[in-house]
Amino acid sequence: MNIHEEIELQDCPCCGGAAMLEEENGWCWYVVCADCGAQTASLEYRTQEERPEAARKVAELWNTGKVLRGGFSD
Image 1 (cartoon, rainbow, N blue to C red):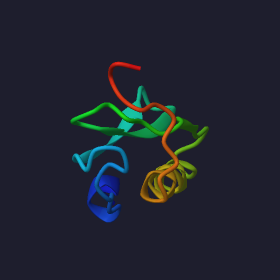
Image 2 (image 1 turned 90 degrees about the horizontal axis):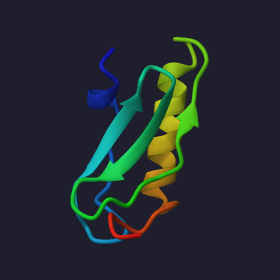
Image 3 (image 1 turned 60 degrees about the vertical axis):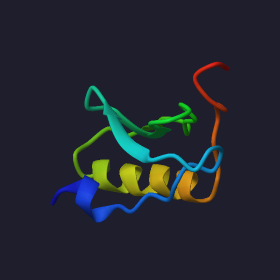
C-alpha cells in the first residue's frame, strides 16, 4: 500500500499552494505547503500498524484547515 497514492490532500488553506504529506524519520507524519510553508501538527505513530492511520488523520487535519504555522516567514 502506497500511502501517498491513497490519501488526497486539498490545496493549502492559507495560499492555495500544493500540499505534501511528509514522514519524519519513521516516527511521525505532517502535511506542509510547498509554496508558503504552512504546516499541520506532527502526528506520531509507534508501530507500522499505526502508520497509515496517523497519515490519514494528519491529512484530515490539513483538509479541514487545521494549520499550525502560517508560512516560512513565521
